[in-house]
Amino acid sequence: MAASFIRRLRNVLALAAAITPLAYALPAHAEWPDRNITMIVPFPPGGNTDVLGRIVAARLTTALHTHVIVENRPGAGSMLGTQFVARSKPDGYTILMGSISNVLNDFFYKKPLYNIRTDLIPVSQVVNVPNYFAVSPATKIDSLAQLIRYAKQNPGKASCATSGVGTSPFLSCELFKRMAGVQMTTVPYQGGIPAIQDAIGGRVTVAVVNEALPYIDNHQLTGIAVTSAQPSPLAPGLPAVAQSVPGYDVTSWYGVFVPAGTPQPIVDRLGAEIGKAMQDDDVKKALVPLGAIPVGSSPQQFRQFVMSEWTKWGKVAKELNLQLD
Image (tube, rainbow, N blue to C red; front, side, top):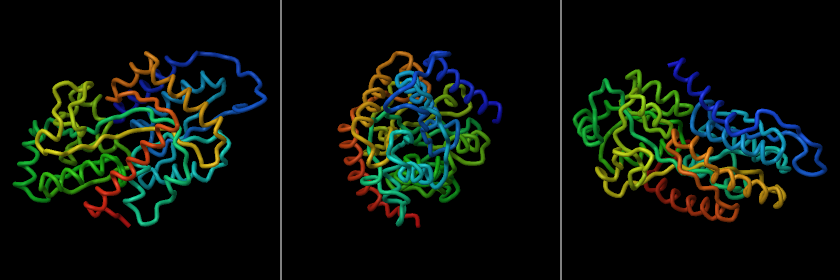
């Protein structure tokens, strides 16, 4: 498992290097940015948030002529790293690679560590990524229908590994249990990679994460479904959960945020550069192994999207009674 993780991390760094000049001079600037920018990733290294953060940071490093340094600050379902950004000086030098978790935490916790509507400014949606239901080949489970049968025949015995409380995979598992009428134990990890490792090792029945595609492709895991309403074009042959559980639809998304109060010209510049990056052919190629579909929206578009997600998932969380503290 360690060797697989190291190979994945090396591949991430290689992708970042491929889309960044090997060397360049950092000119003096009279205005932003005139020093390094820190991108906070609120999950551990190796997961999709981390990989996407490094890809975007590499492009921004080139576009802004300054180093954009990725710093991992995992914990509390992404809340610790997000809180750090929300409390940072709003000067454009601390940014967040955020995700749908930043919206979901508002409903999963009585006292979230930040307010997504007032403490952060949405800059640009980077990608959409479905979550994947994936099992170890040793389970002999080869379809979602078979997983449902197993869970119904063995109430409470099946387990569902996710990338952490308050994340899209966590919601995917909880919504699946409710809509499919099965009893399963949800096991939250600090990130998708540890969940995948335990699924490969047979310590959990199924992993529901958005980092699973490379492990499905190399046959370490068997993919049985994607959580988006329709099958993903990047995972041909893998059915949508909705084909077995009508009406089911959960899609992860990732995007960049900055602290509230960040000057609008900085927000607009960041949004424009991220939008350009998501249209770059090399970036699109780098996203394929992640099962990610590029977006690159404007700050205004992303803000509207985040607010619509807040309304949508607030209703679902209330229906599922998922408050966790």
